[in-house]
Image (tube, rainbow, N blue to C red):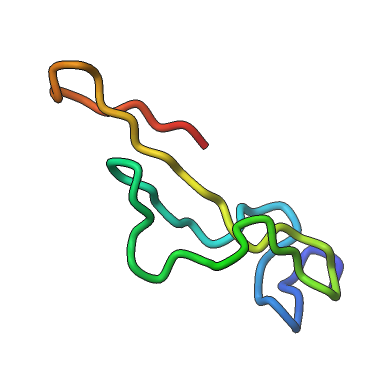
Length: 65
């Protein structure tokens, strides 16, 4: 690999996993069954889960990765 993409998962060693969102406590369509899943070849985390949390007034969001 040496700085390239893993031939199995297609991710780079220094980049995040595929980004998925949880908004209002409900996972978006296409959310993985196992968000902790790792590539069997390079052991890179396949998913980067971002939870959007809105303040009490609903006027903004705080991302919690």
